Amino acid sequence: MGLGIILIIAHNWYDLVKVEFMSVSNKWLDGRIKGLLPPEAKLVHKTGLSRTYDGLTRATNDAGIVTLPDGNHLAITVFVSDSYDPKKKREVTIAKAAKAAYDYWTNTDK
Image (cartoon, rainbow, N blue to C red; front, side, top):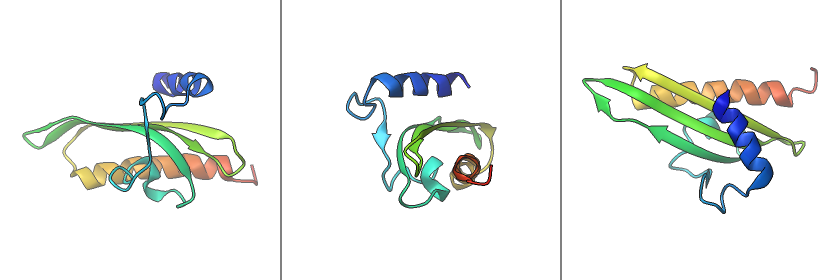
C-alpha cells in the first residue's frame, strides 16, 4: 500500500514519464501489469527484478498507474518475492492481479 500512495501523490504533481521516473508501456515490459489488460489501456509503470541465485528470485515487481476508460486512474503495485517459479510465471501472476483490479474498477454493475 505504501508504494501505491506514493504513486498517487506523484501522479498528482508530476508527469511521471517526463521526469523519467516511470516509462510508458512498451512491448518489452508488457508481460506484467499490462499483460492481460485491454490493448487500449494506457499505463505508465516502473518494473523491478532482482537476480536469481540457486533458482530463487527474490523480487519481480511492477508498479504503475492505469488510465481507466472513464478517465480516472488506478494505481497498481504487485510484488512477487522469494519465488522459484520461472520469470514468465511470475509475470503472469502480476498480470492476473492487475487484471482483477482493472476488472473490479471498470465493472459498471458495482
